[in-house]
Image 1 (tube, rainbow over the protein chains, first blue to last red):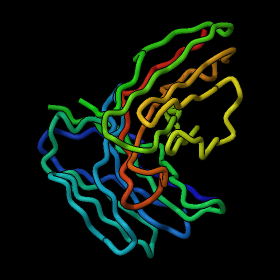
Image 2 (cartoon, rainbow over the protein chains, first blue to last red; image 1 turned 90 degrees about the vertical axis):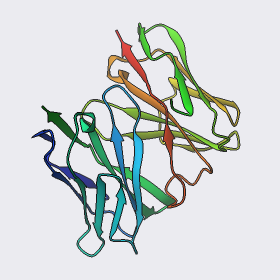
Image 3 (cartoon, rainbow over the protein chains, first blue to last red; image 1 turned 90 degrees about the horizontal axis):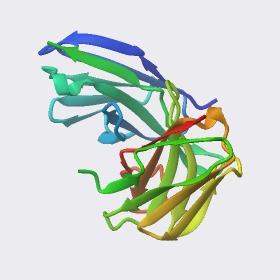
Image 4 (cartoon, rainbow over the protein chains, first blue to last red; image 1 turned 180 degrees about the vertical axis):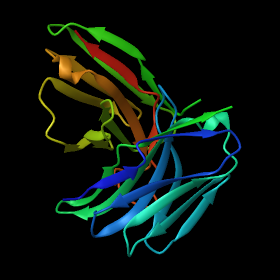
Length: 114
Length: 117
């Protein structure tokens, strides 16, 4: 079954600290992987999109890594800020029976406190 | 400010009511989507429209009826809903209707919070 599992479910860190969110997937064949940030009460906003040939991609203080062999991705946040408090959603695109489809993870809820 | 605008932001309706959610995109995209987001669950794709034509209906109950009069507007008509339909409904758009394509970034609206009582 095509699945995307994210860990931890939730995380609390102090402002200024770094953190890493994990995403493991079973989607196969794999096409691309995305990370979205969703602030409370708002829609998701795209952070990165990586294809199978890319193993790292940065967007400011956000760095995503991808290991297509082990089917794992991580999102590293550097020098966290209060505004980083949000849900982070991993989304994997796979080749399904009826074409490429997106499989969404349930998200990791990050809270940054001062 | 997002390029995808949804109204209303919050809606409370009874199980016998008929209401509609509205979405408008200002990005010049050709594809629009409806997603459902329930608490602590992954987003679920409901419908996809590409150039005004419905290209995907993800086994959604008929009490949800989408309408796409043009590439910029999308509606979700609601009738005889159930309490378990309470969720955040997200509209999105992208350049084309190939939802999962690597070059196809999906832009989401702020969502409409629906509560069915």
